[in-house]
Image (cartoon, rainbow over all chains, first blue to last red; front, side, top):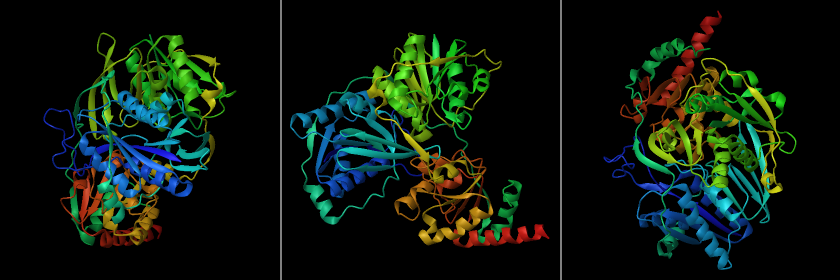
Amino acid sequence: MEILVCVKRVPMVGGTIVVTADGQDVDTKMSGFAMSPHEECAVEEAIRLTERLGGRVSVLTLGPPAAAEQLRDALALGAGRAVLLATDGREWGPIATTAAIVAEARRQADAGQGYDLLLLGNEAADTGDYQVGVRVAHALGWPVVTGIKGIETDGGTVRARREYRGREELFEFALPAVITVKEGINLPRYPSLPGRLRAKRAVIEEHEPQWQPEGLRKQGLRVPEGERKRANVLGTGPDAVPALVGVLAELGVLP
Amino acid sequence: MTVLCLVELDGDGAADASLRALTFARDLAGGADLAAVLFGAAAEVPAQALAEYGVTSAYVTGPGRLAGYAPLAWARVLAGLAEQTGASAVLAAGTDHGHEVMAHLGALTGHPVAANCVSAAPAGDGDWRLVRQRWAGLLLEDAVLSAPVALLTVATDTVPPQPAASPASLAVHVHEPDLAEEDLAVGATETAGQAGGASLATARVVVGGGRGVGGPDGFAALEELAALLGGVVGVSRVVTSEGWRPHSQQVGQTGTKITPELYLACGISGAIQHIAGCASAKHIIAVNKDPGAPILAHAEYAVIGDLHQVIPALVAAIRDRGGGAAR
């Protein structure tokens, strides 16, 4: 089974999120980068599927050359091949991103190594557009489901599960297909030392797709005006419990 | 000009997120026709609620060929109705179904989709000025949308549901769309699932546990406290990625968004991805060893101390008090 996992490099934000002075980006001077969380699980799921059914996991990212770091993270976990769609660092919208991913899928198909399954995260942690997987599926003429928390397949058909409003939804369809997954579908493994070494030496395939403008244009980013609170400290350690019980009584949550 | 809004059914009425989307859509329509699109039996249409929210037309499809949820088919219906009504905008709530259907509609039409909008207004020349959420609402993006039809999802936690000043006169149309076999190829078979995530989302009290709990065994005291308060346990991402607790208990950007009266966050530092999931709690109390933990900037009250001492003492105090009240 040939599986392509599309991952995104996103800032690793901690206790606060800061916007750059020009208001165009998240300030990453103090933070590292990581694979967007749902996609860590997509990589894990792809590796588990090929461990069971055979085949190969390719991992793709669209981003600046530094995004090779996230590809190597995926290689260290067990992906066999990595593709960097290199950009000059500016933000790509969902429609241009879709075109770049579709071009990669067609290149592989033309080379006689077409993908059976494309996995993506349900939404990117940063831009949260919720649509690239669906757009890719339409362009390829493949079935698609999003937000999946369980995949069973024999390599021919897929049973994909998720929960919605407390009910389980089950979808059944034939491969090739696109599935977007959510964190919780599995618990990703940690990379092994041999895996890390292999990833370090691996050759990353590179292409330079063409950026295109889109109808939805970012003007700027800002942190919403929240009520940053300063917590009223009730006390220290167990001595604070009577005061805490008083507050809980006031809030009406005590039995 | 008409504004179309997908209305999801939940139980025997319109979903709360859809009422919020209708409120948003009515503002956007600015007096023009507001049409609701529903999937289900005609008898299920919550006509009174729709009229109260200012809906002038409702188009209901099903349950003939469209027995259940089929995202591409739903999008095909929206595309057909958008053309039929000459819609200037099509909206849906920013739910899993809403996002999925609107992504299909974007792909079918080739138009952009703006996800999780918190405001929108015409900006002249057919453009729209939007504000939308990024990072699950931790950041706002100001954007301009140019498209023949604006395709938007509405953030589920920002615009309050608000009926119109005066109810509209509603016309219900049973819609019989022309659907191809391929539109129905991917459809959901539904079964009653485990209520894990759902009860966390709707719990009145959530007792949160983070890295400070220290391991899978540390949750017994939190479970006991949650049971006493009639609530449930929620956890931070580190707890689920360490495998201490199942992912269905995660509160945050990649887990569940909670809306309790009280969130008691124990041993949780307060990474913003976690705050994205608990910011809608009415009251937040933090129990943390570190007086500088970021969670304190989001909490109303705090106890500085080790949760392993504070929580058992709290459980004991509540039990004593309960005993007293019974006598």
